[in-house]
Length: 365
Ligand SMILES: *Cc1c(COP(=O)(O)O)cnc(C)c1O
Image (cartoon, helix red, strand yellow):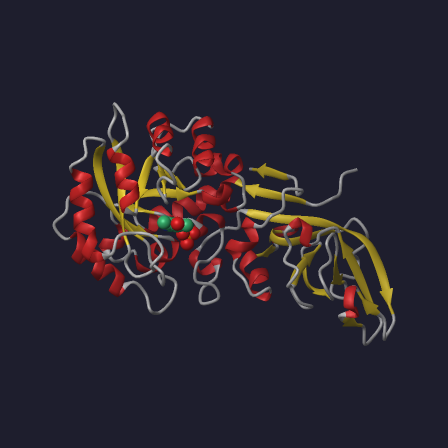
């Protein structure tokens, strides 16, 4: 028998979360962001659930090829554009739209031989200072692109640093508006946080939104809001089973470093899941976990292949009992990935992206 751990990808939840993005910005077209192998879910595993999107956005050219191989003929956007001049050949061959964020990318385009002009998304740096032209250089970049026969339509985009916090998007959005005021072309500004929190602003809801994390059942502004608040569904379940049960006496220690010591008689379960599966080693004693759908907590340190859990709330638990590390548990139980991430001092993003290759993945419903 294989080791009992597995990840389930929930197709219906993916399409429901996509619907939520549409509902938030009903007049916008939706890029489903599937970078980083669909946030760790697997592009092939999410395709069915997200194919109702208007396009797929990602940044790895090999991933763009995988999306085309699945049969997708609609738009694909490279969020970071090309990494070297010859990437443009693949863009031409696969009809990829691409972001343009620096002068080098424009020079590569100017030297590119193509029959079919490219659709590009010119990116403005609205304060994050990673990619994009600064406000005062934006128009010159636009004019340079606009003069190229290799370029078809030019769309305008930016990305927010603080859409998930109270600081919000007011200033970067105003800067973007100022820089693009009388330029033609479609706009795209909203990630998940902006789409959920600020889509009442028509400038955010036009013309393309770019939700990522919300599609995968994690709240972009957790813990201020959770997925129940935003009506999002978990799309990844990581589950395993108990492989042993121990009866502890007072004073008994648990795991590496003896990080947990029992102060009373208690039952402990050993789960076939560890940091080599992508479960964060930094999860301390007390991290929530479900055993047979009942909420309990981890005890002691996370090992490479095992974690240990408190069975006090689940007296019937025995080897073979189902353990939900995050996602959907038996009997309608649920443990949002954001809660686990928080105890490890990280985000749902990092946990889902870190799902280890050794965990078998299966698509359900
Ligand atoms: C990753 C990414 C997104 C999606 O962000 P989420 O916070 O996951 O919604 C949108 N736009 C760009 C440019 C990105 O890189």
